[in-house]
Length: 438
Image 1 (cartoon, helix red, strand yellow):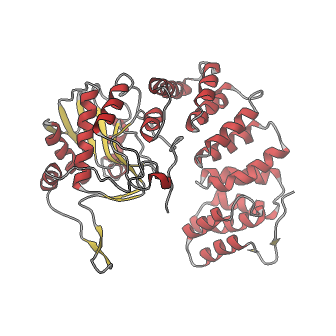
Image 2: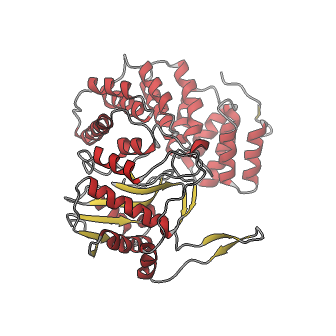
């Protein structure tokens, strides 16, 4: 039985964090209510959580979640209601709320693989890969290779446990179902990339292992405070754009990749950066064509491209690369990863303002304001990038040195494995975690 302070008469939660969530809903602040639900922790009474979620789901128009929450609020000890609630939470992007009820069901139904798989899905979406791996390992005697052993390998990789990943992958049978073959090949490439690096360590190594992506620059701020080389909020500069493009040039040289053109994408940011890249790489700029070989496709931010009218079609075409095609993204979002993973990325951010975007300004007296977006033609902004000062910011001095020589050595070490396979989306930060900000 799951106990908790809940009164059907009051139809209101009583625990402090959930009261705050309820008050957020009173004021129409749905995101605030979700933040308070997370803050309530996993020991919050199931009936009260369900009551808040029922109301939040109604406000969001999530009828399936509303019905599952209402059923659980009425009978918080009912196994099917607990499972249905957990399943609906996972489907609606509230995986953190699914974990306690699914664990409760599994406690009373040990060996129920349908519950194990749903719990693993919730752990994965929360990037709690170690717990997902442990849960699967406990049921190894009963599970199937596909999907269970595959999921064990995947979560071991994402947790940084290469020994378990290699051991379990060796036991994994070839998939009989054709739908699993691309996944199997993708996972095999991940292990091959890890083997090529020996013992992966640090953000650049693991970014390559899990996505086949080469990270050009590391954030010099907050490294020891939890950022580990990723940016949180960044106001980008022409100099940072130029520095990342120079790293792209080093990468192409070190891997003996010889593009003949730079392909321009249609969104404004990508066009600006693509024109600058053409100058830096001394290549002609041409419009993007999905079948064009031996070209560097340059995006400023792939999520921004996805919002362009022709973006979804282009993103789909980029999933499988044309011969000799390199996809470079300057500013890759690590908390909302793009639908395709670029072969090269200049930097990783949670939130970015492009050099030509509306920017935050701090005056000498400490007052803040906004600078209007720079509406100059793309050609003028590209020229400004090319002539910018690309000296890397030394930051707060807590991060490791990242000279061109070290980057070049890394690029040379991954030459044989780079630009292989598809560009599948990477849904996890992997073993190197960074602090998230909301």
